[in-house]
Length: 69
Image (cartoon, rainbow, N blue to C red; front, side, top):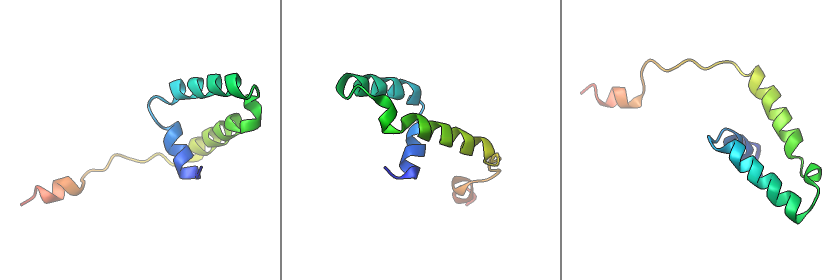
Protein backbone atom coordinates (compact mmCIF):
# COMPACT_ATOMS: atom_id res chain seq x y z
CA UNK A 1 0.00 0.00 0.00
CA UNK A 2 1.35 3.45 -0.88
CA UNK A 3 2.14 5.82 1.96
CA UNK A 4 -0.53 8.29 0.82
CA UNK A 5 -3.14 5.52 0.96
CA UNK A 6 -2.02 4.53 4.47
CA UNK A 7 -2.21 8.16 5.63
CA UNK A 8 -5.71 8.51 4.19
CA UNK A 9 -6.74 5.35 6.02
CA UNK A 10 -5.30 6.54 9.33
CA UNK A 11 -7.00 9.92 8.99
CA UNK A 12 -10.38 8.28 8.32
CA UNK A 13 -12.89 9.21 11.01
CA UNK A 14 -13.55 5.53 11.79
CA UNK A 15 -9.89 4.51 11.81
CA UNK A 16 -9.90 3.37 15.44
CA UNK A 17 -12.80 1.02 14.77
CA UNK A 18 -11.23 -0.19 11.52
CA UNK A 19 -7.94 -0.86 13.32
CA UNK A 20 -9.67 -2.91 16.03
CA UNK A 21 -11.44 -4.92 13.33
CA UNK A 22 -8.20 -5.48 11.40
CA UNK A 23 -6.38 -6.60 14.55
CA UNK A 24 -9.17 -9.02 15.44
CA UNK A 25 -9.14 -10.38 11.90
CA UNK A 26 -5.36 -10.81 11.85
CA UNK A 27 -5.30 -12.44 15.27
CA UNK A 28 -8.03 -14.82 14.19
CA UNK A 29 -6.44 -15.78 10.90
CA UNK A 30 -2.65 -15.46 11.29
CA UNK A 31 -2.16 -15.28 15.02
CA UNK A 32 0.71 -12.75 14.84
CA UNK A 33 -0.23 -9.09 14.44
CA UNK A 34 3.35 -7.87 15.01
CA UNK A 35 4.58 -9.30 11.71
CA UNK A 36 2.27 -6.96 9.73
CA UNK A 37 4.07 -3.73 10.64
CA UNK A 38 0.83 -1.97 11.63
CA UNK A 39 2.15 -0.65 14.93
CA UNK A 40 5.41 0.53 13.40
CA UNK A 41 3.56 2.43 10.69
CA UNK A 42 1.19 4.09 13.17
CA UNK A 43 4.13 5.14 15.35
CA UNK A 44 5.96 6.59 12.32
CA UNK A 45 2.81 8.35 11.13
CA UNK A 46 2.14 9.91 14.56
CA UNK A 47 5.71 11.23 14.74
CA UNK A 48 5.46 12.65 11.23
CA UNK A 49 2.05 14.20 11.89
CA UNK A 50 3.36 15.81 15.07
CA UNK A 51 6.14 17.49 13.06
CA UNK A 52 3.90 18.79 10.25
CA UNK A 53 3.20 22.52 10.15
CA UNK A 54 -0.35 23.45 11.12
CA UNK A 55 -2.37 24.53 8.08
CA UNK A 56 -4.49 27.62 8.51
CA UNK A 57 -8.06 27.71 7.22
CA UNK A 58 -8.26 29.27 3.76
CA UNK A 59 -9.80 32.72 3.65
CA UNK A 60 -11.17 32.12 0.16
CA UNK A 61 -11.68 29.02 -1.95
CA UNK A 62 -12.60 28.18 -5.54
CA UNK A 63 -16.33 28.25 -4.82
CA UNK A 64 -16.00 31.78 -3.47
CA UNK A 65 -14.32 32.87 -6.71
CA UNK A 66 -17.01 31.22 -8.85
CA UNK A 67 -19.73 32.97 -6.84
CA UNK A 68 -18.17 36.42 -7.39
CA UNK A 69 -20.05 36.85 -10.68
